[in-house]
Image (tube, rainbow, N blue to C red; front, side, top):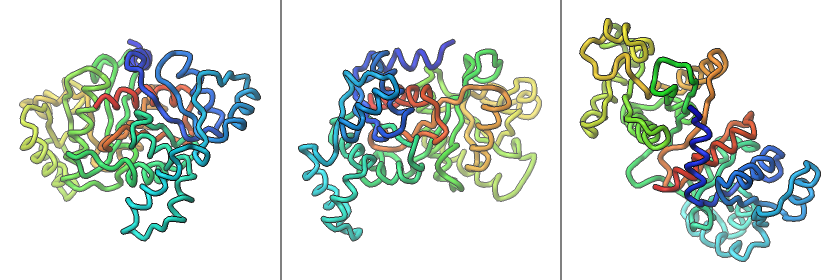
Length: 331
């Protein structure tokens, strides 16, 4: 089972355009050539073309076939600045500050996505998550059916007996520190949707807790119970249950013992963590101690496809997230 390979092949069939705004980062340049060479997407790199070409040459890379765009020299720079000023004027944005902001490749790239010049954007190798999401929030905006942006990782290891076909999807592991019940419900639904789109299986969603079906109590358990009720009320056809401890969610014999009537216990392929502490720690433990591949983070809830990377990402990480972004842009 080659999950990353399948992502890349499926993305290549779509012919999408992905903008990479961090062209000063060597990993981005290396990833751009892989994306081009494997036909995953057309690539736009933002920055001074001469500087990008020289940096590529220094790395032994051929920039041919990459679209090099200098934001300030671009024919749309003025109109993008004016539009951004109009978008943010009520928040105190001035025309001068709008022009200054639009020189930032993150914001220019987001405006390219907003206008359809690119189908999606991938950044975060050299920028903090907050900076990437700020550009996305302010320009691309939220999807009409959601009030929260969240994230998930597809955790992959071929010899796993748990999950589905060697995959388990974890959410939210990168964005929301303390989601309330309503937000946790949205995270669950969004993560199920992402799992279906990227992994090709029907999601079985476990709402995780330190309690399984009332074995423990407290405000944190109450939050998960309330989130479950919201999800079930709005999505009656979704297989979802909780609160479940992670062993009860994943291991069939423990699931049968602790939650014998659950449609999810022991068979979960989507795990929804109650807060960011649990989600971030959980995915990194599985990645490092179980040597699982962590594909993501995949952003959920934006009106168009924008994804954030870890600043410790590899070239392969960037390529895989670019493929995911191309697939997400189908929506």
